[in-house]
Image (cartoon, rainbow, N blue to C red; front, side, top):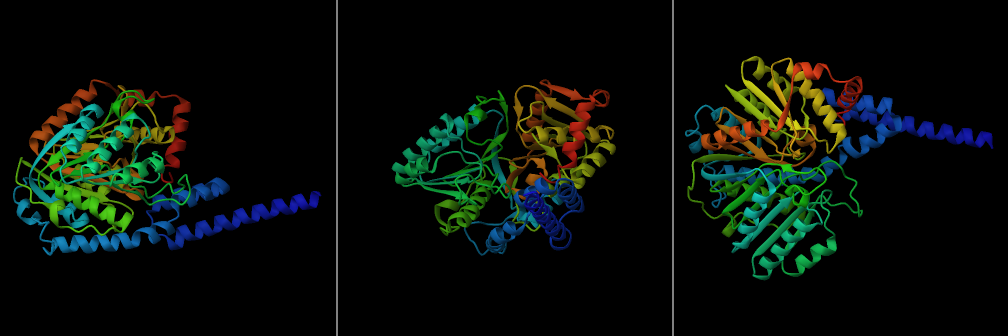
Length: 483
């Protein structure tokens, strides 16, 4: 009996060692990763043989990425190339012409265009929303006024009052003959599929993105984190709000501070293109780039906009490179907000260099922690930048979920991408980079107003933190390259 138990134990240990060796060999020789990412994974696998290997399968293994998104990347690039060459008459690429209107940020715009085919559009009108009530009332008004089509792409849709209100509004428009398409992330979604069948019965089309065969999705990486809405090809929404009561401040975290924008003008076609590419990948419907979906847009405002998208199907890391270049472009001020601050070395270096060069760099993160592991790692990263002169603030009035950066009252980025590795490498993200001094000045004032609800993290207060806090920060940061 004792021998059998010993043999079983040896078998289990042997299997664990075999799995870990396979993981280590794969990491070192067969996967192209940043060195810091490789070291984090090796540390996890070696120090936590069982848990580390399981985490590697869930979060780190790239086989599913290569298999699932290779075709998407090829298809998307083919369409974007046709637009660049002027072969798609419904979408005109006027980037080179619009570059002449930018002052001081042409190199930023050119990078985003070269890196991710972020077409530079001019003559847009932008309205910013910083609370859920305003944002969703504007969204429901736009849905109510829709005449031709409604396209929505959300990471999370809750099975609650706001989620039901949205589905009911879409049902009503579908019954009127409006073309309704709803794309949700299969991991983030919480609405039962039976409820979606009721929407489909009214004539709408609904699909999950990167769907799991199991009732509960286990694919934690490669999520569609985008929040994009396009209505009649004329009105677009983008930002950080998902759909759920908590985004109205009715959840366990209390008041909800987020940011989204409503766009009218040529940039809506870029949002529409983003939706069409994702929708066709998920459904194989084959939506074309013509007709009412890409109607010509008159100039209605003064803002120039680029819609920047990144994800595991991209060759580079467009959202990370967007943030790095924006920080390097700052001459006077650089104010950023994010719920999760776990950047890589390139972003940390850019912020440190900016601060040491005399730029007023300020970072705002939430005081409340919806994800404790990420919260402690964020505090550790913020603390490192204090010595360079970066000012850091913890937002106290509820939960801060905005993903924004504004520099020199001139350029503002608002979208879905957090300042963390998950947004840079593993999730599908979309930001609007807005070149508009009026919006930049307004958002700087919004940031300064938010500061009145913050506690500043000074070098002195950070140095006085407890030993337990130091331990949690160090431990969480050590594994932050893994999760």
